[in-house]
Amino acid sequence: MPAEPRTFSTRLAAVPLKPGVYIHRDSEGKVLYVGKSASLRNRLRSYFGSKNNLDAKTTELVSRIADFEFIVTESEQEALLLENSLIKKHKPRFNVRLKDDKTYPYIKVDLAEEFPRVYVTRRTANDGARYFGPFASAGSVRKTLDLLKRLFPYRSCTKAITGTDDRPCLEFHIKRCVAPCTGYASKLDYSKVIDQVLMFLEGNTKEVVTELETAMLEASNQLEFERAGALRDRLKAIERVYEGQKVVGLGRENLDVIGAAYGGEEAWVEIFFVRQGNLIGRDHFTMSGTRDETGNEILARFIEQFYTSASHVPRRILVPESINRVATINQWLESRRDGPVEITIPQRGPKRRLLKMVSENAEQGLEQLKLKWISDSTRMESAMSELQEQLNLPTLPKRIECYDISHIQGTNTVASMSVFQEGKPLSSDYRRFKIKSHDRNDDFASMKEVLTRRFKRLKNAREGGEENASFAASPDLVLIDGGKGQLSSAVEAMLYLGLQDIQLASIAKREEEIFLPDAAEPVIMPRNSQGLFLLQRARDEAHRFAITFHRNLRGKSSVKSALDNVPGIGPKRRKMLIRTFGSVKGIREASEDQIAASPGMTEKTARQLKEHL
Image (cartoon, rainbow, N blue to C red):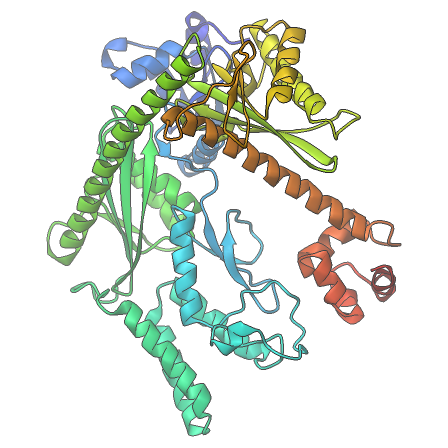
């Protein structure tokens, strides 16, 4: 049970004067705030002493605290890492944090492969691969990949490379791949391409240029004019990319330049990447929970969170103002880089000019963000008001839940729940369901089952049971993807649970008609209606979420069935085979010798597998 605040004084006296992380929770056990300190006792006491020294945000936080806990660490650096991990996990509303910091994309160069691939991933692991990022969006990482593909002819396929294919694919003919699949490029030749990719991503373009110039000269001396011409074209392409990107006065410095603009609930942080004096890229991030926070704290939080997962820490980081906890952060960055790091505020010269440009970009970004907030909030308010009027709802539909069923001829029947909060998707509250009913071809029965399961948990929450926050929230409108039949199933579920206060509607796909439980005729909303558009978005999100889940289950089922009942192939070997060859198709195309040489396989099991497939 949560502790009463009046009992905190006794507990606080027992908190150690050691570094660590503390967690504040509300009366429902939800994490409100995660913090760190060199002295846990002193920091925790500061929350529950005099209220006069607290800002508005901290005062509101303290008013909600029902309990706290703490974790002692060996050092402040260890506390910093643990704090960032817990913030990322719980996303507390009172913390300053990178917005939507769930799975930022990275570029992965998989060096564990014999012929490494270069691709986008949202998961990093200590697997011997090289990771570059994080990038703020999928769009920015795709642009970088497109550039890499134009400059370096590495493979983009997932097939097993044997070197014995009859002919190369189109990528080879347009000079986007050296075709190791046919044996045109040896393992050594291909590894040189990957080395150049790595150097380029690290910003070492001069080394790439030097290596290409040497290779071009060698090819020319050996009268390999076609190869020399291809290398010349790559050199010119790299030079074109870097024309105008030289930052005057920076020599060959490697540094990151960070600018921030803040005001209100969110901040905009702009970061430019300079490698060997070249501006090789830029990105921007939004941070939430910044109300009443200073620039010193916002910058410190960004650096802590960005470089926790960043693939590279540069020698120097430029910032527009001093940051909080600079000594601790500097020491932590140096341990990550395994070398010296300087966090500096340039006062004059080219670095100051560059920082000014980055800061101006941050100001522009925040201004655009504010204009978007105003536009979005006005439009969403209009959409919700329109729905309240058209559907005769007692309150504004601030929380809309939409449900969809997905299956193919009754196989792997699943359902999804999308959630829109004040007109915007709340993806953290999305949920998926596997249908358990015997007759999975019956969409009506499936819908009734899902709604019964979901709203039984809401009923339990109303009666004081501990519940997942997503299921404990009461929707202002439940939208069903379907017609009158599916809506009837929803009505039956609510009657069964005694939850007649839940507002229901369904949306039919063809004519976009809105059906209500007690209405004889459907509601027809104008095609350009913001309210209809909001319902369509909720419906489309639920459909997308259900289809994705169904595909995943179907994919797992097909892999399982194709590799089932093969003597000697259990779950572990099945997993290793898919990891090695990419798919069942890849396994079929591989030779018996290749399968036998893959991890965990023997000649006998390889032969049995080929016979089975």
